[in-house]
Length: 353
Image 1 (cartoon, rainbow, N blue to C red):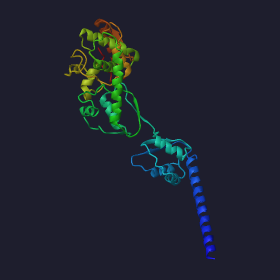
Image 2 (image 1 turned 60 degrees about the vertical axis):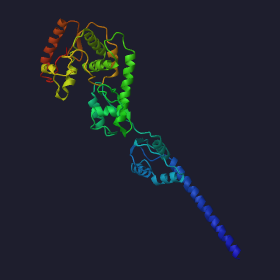
Image 3 (image 1 turned 90 degrees about the vertical axis):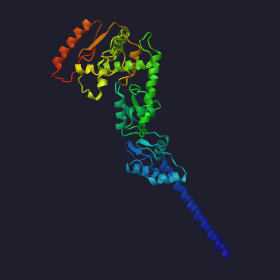
Image 4 (image 1 turned 180 degrees about the horizontal axis):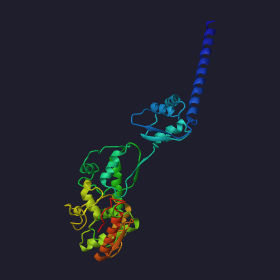
C-alpha cells in the first residue's frame, strides 16, 4: 500500500516536472519568437547611448519611444542565453519595425549616427578650434590650452599651427575628442601637401613644401574664383623671383588680428609685423589660414604669366596687369566703382596691389 502511494507521488512529481519543463520550453520559445519578431515602431527612432548606460535602461528608453514592446522579456531572454551585448557609445537611428535582435546587433556593431563638422577653406586655426569647442558632440580635451600646448599634445611641439590642418568635412561619432579630429586634419594636410610638393613644377622660387603651404594660404585668401588661383599664384611667383614685395592685403589683415573690423585703411599698411608684406619682401613667416587642395595645387603649379599686378574688378574677380601703368588705370577704375557703391555697402575694402 505504501509502495503504491509512493509510486503515485512519484508519478505526480514526474508529471509536474514534465509540465514545468513544457511550460519553460514554451516560455523560452515565446521569448525567442518575440526577440526575432518585428518591433512596433512605425518610423525611425533615435536613441542615445551614453557612458554608464545599462542595457536595461536603454531597453526601457526604447520602450518609451515606441521601438520595443517587451523590454523585460528581451532582457530575460538575453540573460537566459547568458549573453551580455556590448553597446558602443553614440546616437543610433533605429529603423521602423526593427526587431529586438536587430537592435542589439546595431548596438554591438556600433552603427552610430555620424555627426559632421565642416572646416571651410580659408578658415584660420583659431576658427577651427572654436568650432571644435562649440560642437556638443565633441569631447573637449584641449579647451583653454595655448597653441603651443595643443601642438605639443598632438605630438608636434614647436610647430606653428596655422595652415597645418586640412579644411574638410569630418564625420565622427558623438563622444569623439577634439584631439582626435585635429590629429586627422593634421595628417590629412601633411598628406595633401607632400603629394602636391612631389608633383610641383620645376624652377619654383620656393625652398620647401612649407613655403608652398604659406603661398597657398595667400592664394586662398586672395580669391574665391576657382580659375583665378593659378594666375594669382603666377603673380606672386613672378614677384618673388624679382625680389618685389608681395603687397598682399590678407597678410596685413592677419597681422591686425582682432583689430581688423572689415575695412583696411592706408595707415594699416604701416603696421610693424613680419606678416606685413607691404613692408617686408618675401613670404610671411607662416601660413595665414588653412588652404584647400585647389590653392595647394595652384601654389605648386602657377600659371606661366608676365603679370605682376592684380586688382579687384568689383564683380567677384580680378584684373591682371603686366605693368604698373596698366595697373594704375585699373586701380583708379576700381576706386571710382567703390565710391559709387559705398552708400549701398559701407564696408567696401580697399583694392589690392
